[in-house]
Image 1 (tube, rainbow over the protein chains, first blue to last red):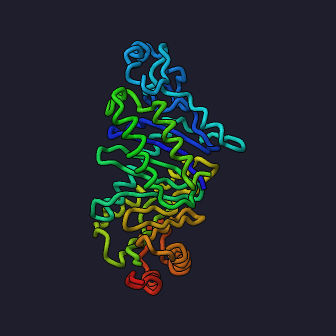
Image 2: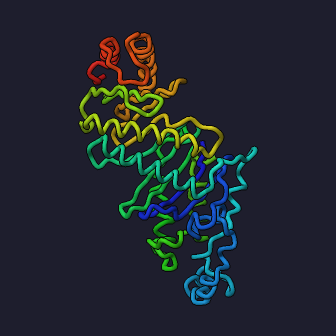
Length: 215
Length: 136
């Protein structure tokens, strides 16, 4: 039993965050312009995005915000907005890593297409405002949690796990509200940037790794 | 525990058989069922490509909040879809039996055109015998 990956989409159908854990079949890096910056360093076409001038100029004003944590060096952007290079994703995988043959942006669009179509299908079939919850194949299980504001949390796990909706809800009420919604440096609802930042990523990572089904 | 409906989708994504049993889901027109079956056919193909861990089949069970769809893909590409309540545990074995009935009453029927809608009294009878009114 394990957890493979997490995608977060905003209400504009764009992938704003991605993180993975045990994953032996990986997508190729996103093509340039295929995904927004600050989604995930692991799949981005520009791993050096954090040195963008627009961010470092704002860095000096941000020191006051994060001074409580004592983590920010004066010449680097605040960790509240910094997008860390994800080393965790490659660490835990065992065995040979193969490619899905898709680039990450294509994969993200396929995932979104699938959940949107299934959501509409379930709604149509039930005749009520019923939500799509999950589906299972022989190799994985996909779980969906949608917030009222239109954010969609998608998690891929082992096919034998029970519903992981509560975990997605925990990610929403915990790390997401704390480090994204309440983070003045994240431009919510922008169509230009994702929501990746160091606090959010490590907080999600802790939450997921702390679960009993994560092995 | 209830069985709401049964679909048979041919290998091109066309709905060739659709029947409702227990009440509980919306009553749709045959045209709407055709569209949904086509969508499901496409989704099924995509889900097998999204696997994070090695090769994968397409979706086998799709769950909503009050019902689920169990999908059986045969070696010839025909899909049998059973719409049941979440607590129904026998969906997979029922689908196996539906496949058996399909082989006997549809494929062995000399008047049946492959890939076309199923109009066979024998198949209808066997399904009625198998599922009844959907209340178990």
